[in-house]
Image (tube, rainbow, N blue to C red; front, side, top):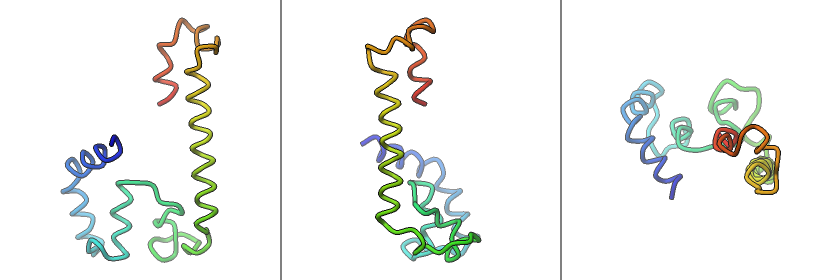
Length: 109
């Protein structure tokens, strides 16, 4: 629910800017090229802006398989969860050494 709310807020704040970008790039929503404006609402792997088809990058979209992308995203999620669980664990005394757990939200980001 939080991601949907974030996307709605993103659209409300930046809708005029996104429309101007789409006009300048000749993008029609729903067509394949519209992935360039959809980047504002999520994460795409590999980044279409760095591919031969959609941007000026050196690789094609087929260079990275769905399986490889899934593994990379799962690994990143694992690292994020590990860090969050590590610094929020009540048995972790390292965070208390700095004067309490007030720095936990800052560490999570």
